[in-house]
Image 1 (cartoon, helix red, strand yellow):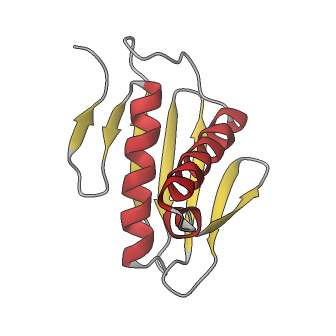
Image 2 (cartoon, helix red, strand yellow):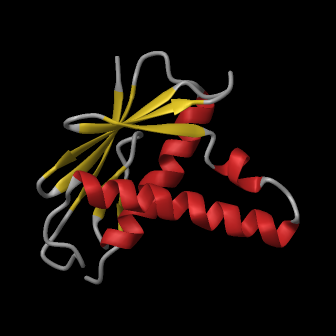
Length: 126
């Protein structure tokens, strides 16, 4: 059974709607931050921080793992929400990385994050 984490936009969010292109830009931004961190450390941190290839499909973004520790994460975009889905074959590495990406997205959107374990985190001013 697949596990799902959801980021919802609320009235206090900085974004009004979510598009596939915006999510792709956030993923690129995450990868760029990791690359810059690696430059400061003189280490290829980007490869460890984001071990996925980005595949854009019609209605979703699929992150395909580059090594054995990572399999796949799906990012499904709805008008006022983003869903991160871990398929049945997902590894512990995928879940950890998906949690990290969810928090990054929620912080940038100032949204309400429903984690894989059912807990809720609020990234907007209440």
